[in-house]
Amino acid sequence: MTLRIAGLSSGEGDLLLSLHRKAEKGVVDAEVEVVVSDRDAPVLEEAERVGIETERIEREGDKREHEERIADAVRSVDADLVALDGYMPILSDGFVDGFADSIVSSHPSLLPSFNTTDPWGSALEAGVEVTGATVHFVTDEIGEGPVLTQEPVRVRPDDDRGSLRDRVRRAQRSAYARAVRLYPDASIDDGNVVYDEGTFGEGRFEAFDKAETLRYGENPHQNAAVYRDGGFEGGSVVDAEEVGAGGKGMSFNNYNDADSALAAVREFDEPAVVVVKHTNPCGVATGEDVAEAYDRALATDEMSAFGGIVALNRGCDAATAEAITGSFKEVVVAPSFTEDALDILHEKGSLRVLRTGELDGERDDRVTKSLEGGLLVQERDDLRVTRDDLDFVTERQPTDEEVRGMVFGYTVVKHVRSNAIVLARENETVGVGAGQMSRVDAVRLACDKAEKEVEGSVLASDAFFPFRDNIDLADENGVRAIVQPGGSKRDDEVIEACDEHGIAMAFTGERCFKH
Image 1 (cartoon, one colour):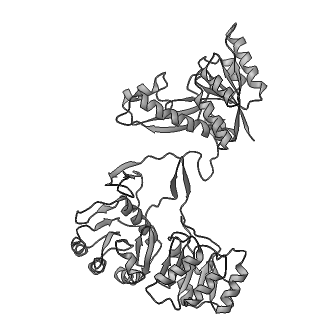
Image 2: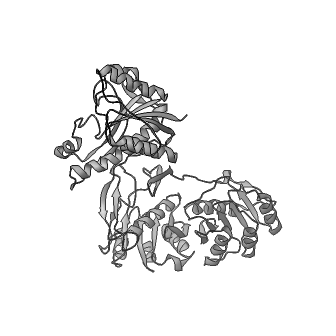
């Protein structure tokens, strides 16, 4: 249902006009039907310009008669919500009662704090670190109604009244739009607003503390910093202790790559190593110990691993450190390091060495991606495929070794940028094809980049195959088993191609894109 709004303003009315713009874009399911003012306010001219009905109702006679004329204007458009934006006259109890629980207003502070006519100056004078904006229901007590939503704003050390007011006003626009979205499902219970936000809340507010100013960002011409979630207590690259020789600090790209490597290596219960370059695994393996796993991981694509990031899910010993320092690496991440391992790693003065502590603790359950003007939020991809999840769809059934390769390959491929192909055996990658615009090119790349024998390997795909050419190319290179989500309208053609080539194939039923 489209919410019908009647706005009351005595000034610029930029909150009401912002709601109108958001409604036109479909950001809120609402329409500002009329703007009413008690004077010749600037909002009237602008509202008329954008096609909103306006009413100028100056006070003539007593207050009750004036408010009744305003109430008539509100009722004439069948308004569901009365939104105040800098409306100067104080509304009487009678008017408020007549539109009970359907009048909202915005205040430029986090009520009940700074419920004054100069909340910006009051916040600066009080020396608080955070102020903000509140949208609340209007009652007979000014600024005391039930809070519908709030949005925090950090008070910067160099803020003056004007700069703080500008940023709080932006927060007011954001909070008002959110309040309009929340209002249809909101109710007031014992003086508090109640609504069901579902899995993802209508607002996302989190405080992060600056951990470090970085030398530069993704490129030298970009400034950058890394921020820490002060409440997070799990193992992470942000909270990891730097135990290297004290050369260069972590860069923007180092943090990004190290986080990707750590996320991938956490997937395995056995001793495991992941080598990452530009956020993509270029080698992954498990072994009896991390030294063996590292040798297998590196052998996938030793050329791409040059200058890469190495993540371990077990402590790093001297043998593993010797192997890692055998070629140039940027960062090593592990839960712990022996003293002998650190002595070896310190011989590489520019190598960053991060000690995370145990990796089996808290994880962020949400993943975010910044957009221009917004933010994407999704649940972390915790998909774990086991043998029981595989649906074998071809005439030839896979061997036990091939099934283990399917599970291993599908565990790795979800950490590779799409379109993604991973060639694998039961405990190691054979080749990786990352970030291709067409899937067949990803197959070709994985086979071409492989420094191990492709013959007899398992191919894992992060999404279905749109055409059989992928299967034909895989067969040409000696792939004997395939695991993929399935779900293409040409699945039958793909299965037929596998049967022609004697390739075993399984569907997981779950796609694992990564962008």
